[in-house]
Image (spheres, one colour):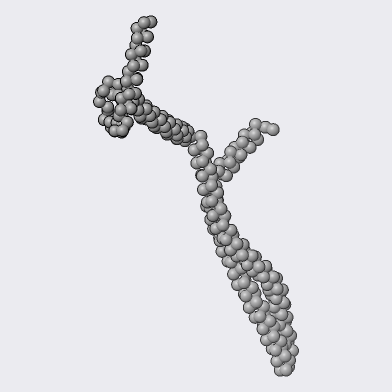
Amino acid sequence: MGLFDRVSRVVRSNLNAAVSSAEDPGKILDQAIMDMQEDLVQMRQAVAGAIASQKRVQMQASKAQTGATQWQQRAQLALQKGDENLAREALVRKKTQAETASALQAQLDQQAGTVDALKRQLIALESKISEAKTKKDMLKARASAAKANERLQNSVSSMSTNSSMGAFERMEEKVLQMEATGEAAAELAGANLESQFARLESGSDVDYELEALKASMGGGTLPPGQESRGALPAGEEQTSEVKDKAVDTELEALKSELDSL
């Protein structure tokens, strides 16, 4: 294979690829319909011309046949008048007209077949154009849908590889992490607050008991709210005093033991 053939093939392939990529289905279909319409106009003109020629031949054939009939009548008239030479001349003219009429009739039969064929072709072309128009609208709609689908797929493909989409996903993950951290902090704060109140409540009971013990031992004043809690009924005051003296005796004995150690 020569260098020229290889270069020619490369150029033609590139041209075909460029033409294919530049083809717009909608525009190509519209142009095809326009071309078919032009063919239809030419076909109609051809049929009209064939019909007009057929009519002319038919008129000529009828005229020749009429002329032959007239010369036949004249030949008969000449014989009736006794002019044989004139009758012979009339028959010669009659023969010429009859031959012309016969030739025109043969041509007319041939043209009739041609006209019929052209009419069938015209009807077929009109049917094809009507069908093509219907298909054109359908194909244009399908081409538009295919283009829209291609644009959509390209958009989806570009979004999946786009850094902005990745940043959006990262920010979404970060927001979720921040929400989880906030919820955990809220739970810890609530637990700490509960523990603080629990310590305060437990501490209050011990403080009250300590103050109550001091009051019972040293005659101190009970904390507010504990006076009613620490107060004894009137009938039990003497028993409480006896118990207090016993407690004091035990404390004194305990101190003596501690001092002797």
